[in-house]
Length: 566
Image (cartoon, rainbow, N blue to C red; front, side, top):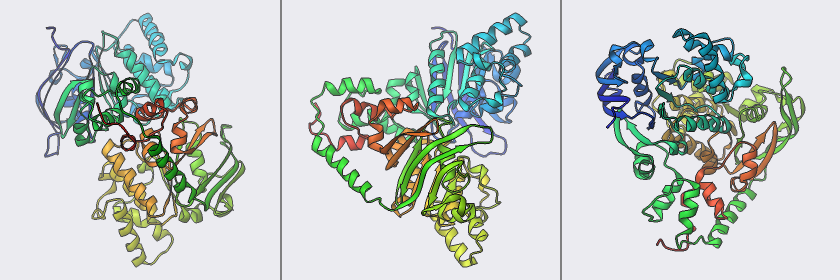
């Protein structure tokens, strides 16, 4: 048996000043050319584990380390980060922090130059790796002018230029839109076929873990289970317990009593066609009819745009003739790739932006005549990054800011803060420092601070970005609860499963236009149009579409099955 490339033995690590271990008793080996995906909830220790592979722990992050991490016979505790960088490449979760050169070419050249690589070899590596990630046409561009997906590709190219034997990527697609995610994953799929590279990727996107050789589940700093990809992704119950998103396809087949669980849409269609199971058309039509009746109740227009256009000062036309209507009690998703105009459209709904041409009306009055302060009482806006919205020293002060600004009586302010914190599950956190909370906690504070103003409409820009599956579901359950209590909800998202499970209606944007609209079921039945917008439904929905029905969740399909299992 060949010696492992990476060997982790009885690893324990505790950050300085912390009482609990971030990693506890980790034993793990990676073979040459292997592709391992690490999955687990937030605070599981995934990024900490990644930092031990290239020596950032213990040399950069100080703390108490026990056990050994060996990469190609180099003990990380005895070799500096610079020495480990010769064999271990690292792409960080915050990939933008890795980029600092004045143009793309220089960024890729930086690493090899530091290792005194021959000039001609550096040129070869620049050309080879920019071509590999599809950035050869951008070689003279400053990194700051690239899109998020292009910056991520550049970070990967810069690390590959060092010719590492081991490549570690920490959630490489966290803030990227679907097309950028696909482009990055396409690169990782090609990388995992190279036998000269051992790949370790930390990932939240379960569908993308399908390409790994093995998957490891981590929770509370402990390695819970490791095994072949099919075995791991078939363990639906364990994934649910860990707070890792299970795939809808194996979840459905398990519920139906199947022994062999398919994972992909293609496998699922083939497996389904071999069974005697039948989908009840009347049961499906009943679901669709109930949905139509619910949507028919939405009659009172609250937000309306007509031929809306917006051109930024730099000449970029972000919206091009957008006409839409949103009703009281609606729960609407706006989807599309980065640059499609989603956030620009949302910011017109509360006056953060005003139309260049056309109109945006709230309560039948043009937004440009109402102003942000007045609109803010009717339409609340929660930004993608809660840290851009939060500024107070305590949760109470943050949530009370809006009502105070509106000069409400102190009793009314107290009542509103209490209600808002209860709505987001943060009652009892009044005196906490919001910045000491997790990303999910800070997101909830941002939502509460908007709720305290009691708007009728709540707009959330990427409310689930950076959250693990359990946090995403908790956030969206809270938002759905607000909708059920009468709030109108508009959310912008890249997560298609969130759209499938929570939206009543969907607007699909491309190049500043709405190219597809309708109920969530109608929109997800149009595979080709979604692909045109660089989107795709969740795997489970793709599978059901192949059978001639559009089911949004495994439970929905299970409830429409006629036949028993084989």
